Picture (cartoon, each protein chain N blue to C red):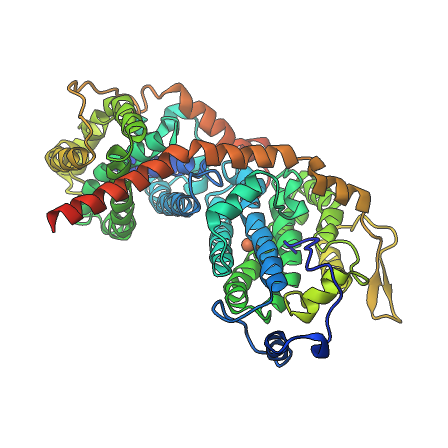
Length: 251
Length: 330
Ligand SMILES: [Fe+2]
Ligand SMILES: [Fe+2]
Ligand SMILES: [Fe+2]
């Protein structure tokens, strides 16, 4: 049982790690000062959540790896984040759309995980949910504000949605790991989270005057680790560089 | 110090007898340790000098995000990454409080931003130096935040109320930053041979630029005399620089690192360290826009501002639409 549980925890922690890293790339160059602060805050929350998930993953694995060992010493094929979060930042609109789509899934997932049979998972979910609820409020407002803003902002947000929508489906794919989690009442079946996600997505897109793409085609391969995008390797080469270049050092 | 070479009226300090009653009352209030608040009468020179000083300080916080932001994506552990992110977030917050303080003097944040981006207003020379290794994150916190604190702690008692109150909040966070920087330096100085070398190299590169943060000697400056009479400058540049050296030299010794100054020596008689002046030609070059990163920093800020235009316009347009819809519904 510990292997699927380890996989599941890596998925949670890698999502927040990779997205937290992407968001942190905005440091100092956001459109307004308030956004610099808000983006840093989101990145901070996600990095904090990463530490909780990956430390638990390491403990479950029982091979002496902690969150840092998992974050900084695994290679691309060992990462289990969904493809959505490793997509490039693009413009501010694309970053916000990516964050909104993830936040909406993330919140649903965390609500379900609060009732996990695994006490530590339930506790991490409860703590994370407070933060993610706030992230979602912000990104919802931003998606609506920019979607229903000027022609330019509207067009950019529609383009961002079209660009990212093919990465939504993967968040709801169920596989053997999920089945094992469901069997132990540790985590929900991701497919069950989709209806609530869809309903809220439609509401927000309607307020934002944006049109949901008709094709439900979904890229896959991130959460299974079978085929990440080319972007992840470049992110890791930056993120892991010091740990790899100076393996004997402590920081 | 984030405010360098601030010009005041350029005239000498008036005596109380030379002042008209309004100005005399203003100066007497300051002399008695009172605070000036936004709605109070103040001389034009006081207002203008403060706008320049607070604006330059705010810009320094904003541009100061860049050299440290440079290492956020390469921070070596999750904890270090979180600490650095939180620090850079604090700096953005400092910028925000300071712009708010400046706005109470009748200048908008947008105007100040335009003046920064056009190069009309300056920011501290220190942020035009590159951060090249992880040890620089230690050196910046230890030395740069350390030098900033030297200047900002006395400014908590400055005569302008909003500025003084902003400083109180900022100083708490800055001393936290300095401790975190020192902590990185400790790890590096006590780490592997490569880490120790990085730590020494960072100190070598940041020592003199940190001394320059206080600005050139201003003992004879009319600007400083006026600013000190107004209590918007509390100490001379040389006093603060000396204090900084006296505080930092023993810390470097504790780290087992060598300050790159062969003349640095304890002077028993003065009860202070003797030390070498930085290269002031280099300082003026940096102020002229010829710092190692000056062009990069300004390009980065301008690009961020230009790239963000559609976002600011979009959010503004949405707020307008919402307001109009609400009005129509009423
Ligand atoms: Fe600051
Ligand atoms: Fe600072
Ligand atoms: Fe600071």
